[in-house]
Length: 304
Image (cartoon, rainbow, N blue to C red):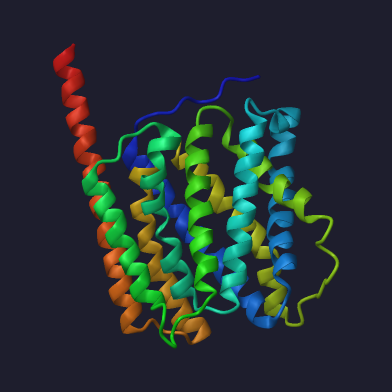
């Protein structure tokens, strides 16, 4: 096995890469929403998203990497990560049928809060009461957006909440695999695992797109998914999930504009209020992480 680049502490580079990945993944979300509005089955959309991902990956990297592309130092973790990504995508695409992009994306952005909550048992990091309080405040923001108990509540919001949970788990597994496998190998398993799992049911209710623009969306999903997640995998080599996650909030601005301009679904005042609460709680966690990291560095220097 060739050596894999080790995990490095280069937070600024990691942040730049994750911002770039969010811009690319925006194209994926818009394409998937478009196909959902056209009425294509969710399973078909998910299968094509990963099918194109896998085909493009093999065309680009197999000639360069050869059989090394398929060799993992922790294939069980790779398959688990791929399965989490499949569930994340399926829940997200299904929720898009019933909810605006603004709502589905806002709920998904509770994943940084979930990452913080799960970082203790899964990454061995300590989470103090201040960050637990920020997590609780963030979930209050979700209640503001979905407004359970009112006529505005859509049960599909629960799908987006489930999506956020598996997205957080996917992010933690990505960090665990940083320095274990190459980004190319991670992307192979991220594409191959969903394709294999979906293959038995993918063609049971197949419907071809009816509009030329939908054909473009049909094929561009794979390219955007591959590019976005490749950048995301590389970003996690340079910074932790807790450091990177808050910066993906910027994509909420792009998604809100896309929802408004393309699908005529502008954000309402409840969305703006709820997102503000979620973003502030996430940013507090990020600032807290930075402060604790600096304190830890100072202690290490003093102990030398």
